[in-house]
Length: 393
Image (cartoon, rainbow, N blue to C red; front, side, top):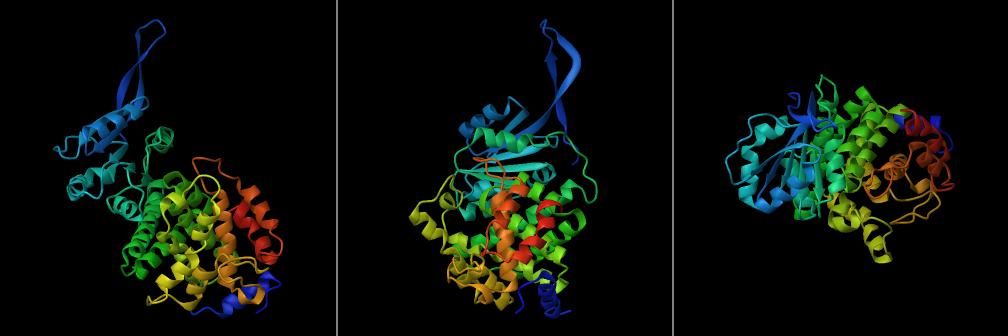
């Protein structure tokens, strides 16, 4: 293998190719300083809250009413809302079959809302997967965070008219991919066979969106609608795809790249979300547990048909470094393949620019400088070629 220049790497790759309805608002009178009511109206987007208990319903309403017009409804009552809300917030136990049935009965109205936020009491991959299956555009597990919830709903809260190829379709591509990732994690958790073709198709849709609208739009949309591990997988896939496109790889190699990116963190399904999404530094025991995920992912995928040896290698070795300091096998130099090298750079960059509610998002230029400073660990020619992906695309 020739490693010392990007053009020679590209030759090797090429030789390997096988050929809303607009959100309705309810006007609210605005009070003048003299106590009168002026004629101008202040539009407040309508948010529908669905919950399985009155206590949950009132708790969510009290948070939202300072910024939104709020309509509340218990899931065990008849659906009453006549107009399409800007957003729907669901707070219910998704392990309850009756709640799931009640949400499904409202599926038509749910689908028309621009944002569908599910607040889960229990942090589990299965629960998150269930929420996405019910139409969630964002899942926030655990204790309700008032600031995070308001931020999720307030982002671009003004009504929009979605045009073909516009934000609505961009969000659809994100949600298709997020649902595939959630389903993939659930398969691992429950020991069920993986939908390899469905996951690969989700990756293809991401590639199509990035080819049409660019990487920056993908990153912005993902960070707006997702948190934690699921956000990371979506970001890595998008960055990997754009990196491959910038290198001029062919269709077959691009499919290998996005498949590797979609599958790369599947082993994290065996790690509690409390550790995966923990704010701050992991302790030694938590770090050791995190470092089991490449081997766990490889172990789960290796007996599935349709997953090539190159993709399995990327899943197992995407945390390896050229100087031998990575894990799980301490590989170095010539032992690390091309897909792994590209995926590793994309993975690190995506991790650095993730949006986390407990820290500011790192600027892309700063993240790229960190990559440049990893002397001996990453391939210099690839890092140099990654510059346009990191900064301009």
